[in-house]
Image 1 (cartoon, rainbow, N blue to C red):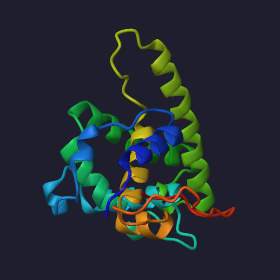
Image 2 (cartoon, rainbow, N blue to C red):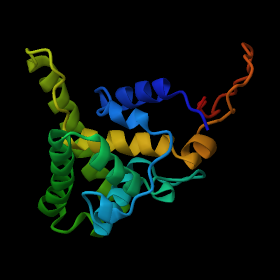
Image 3 (tube, rainbow, N blue to C red):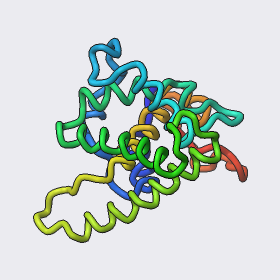
Length: 196
């Protein structure tokens, strides 16, 4: 499978308001086979990532985040591709989800219903947007500022989902490359975006 990863990165940047973190992730053609013990996370962490991912990309008439096991892919990518500072920000994002669930609803995130989970992540997404805008405007040394922890979670959810076989083939439209150029490809309202 060949995807236009540049377009995917543009989509992630548009969806999260900041450039995709960890260009090292682009080095993977296929995700290395690792056990959870070979990552910095546990089975419970992976299950949690899948639940958060399912709120971001829920199953509809197409697969959702849990269907492609984004949690496992996120654990591998954070372990292999993130710097220690990025790993800390990612883990801080996870901690903020759990803390906000407790302070807002008085219970664990995994015990929240779908509407509560959606509202909670929408709140964090709004907080992340404000944080990322302030970080960009306050940045004077020319280095890329570290995005909000929730932004890292959202980026990885989108990246791992849309680079999975199911995400690329069942959610996006896919034509194997090399294909032929067709400047008059029909498009109907509601057609899915192209993966290639």
